Length: 132
Image 1 (cartoon, rainbow, N blue to C red):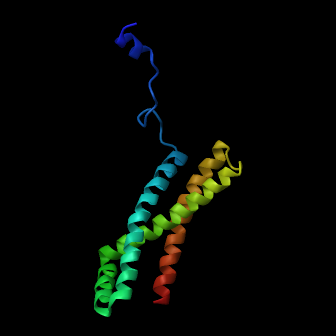
Image 2 (cartoon, rainbow, N blue to C red; image 1 turned 90 degrees about the vertical axis):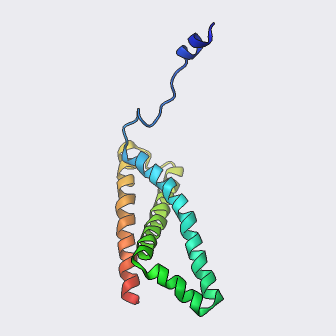
Image 3 (cartoon, rainbow, N blue to C red; image 1 turned 120 degrees about the vertical axis):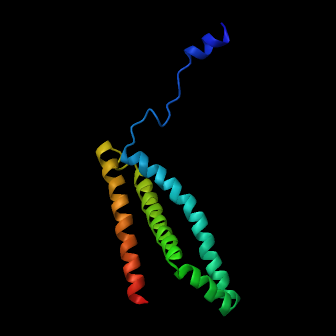
């Protein structure tokens, strides 16, 4: 059997261009992305804690960066990523128990995780700005 015949008979692996994006698939991808974002966001939290332990001038410098509009935008994204990743983890924990695996239920849970993460992010920021 020649090499070209062997390759012609092999099935093609599915790829993203074949699948129509569904909410569950998109939330799975976003869950992975937020996991990566949390790694870098946690480095920012560590930087803030190190600045707090170093001296007042350095702490004020880091606070000025985080208090700028770009810093607040990054912190808003970090808050959303943290909450969205947590809710996605809870969703997967529910699936690990064998519950909620029906197609309609998984789609509802995917949309609910998105809505809930955005809502909780807004609430956290409202509370944070109310306290300060």
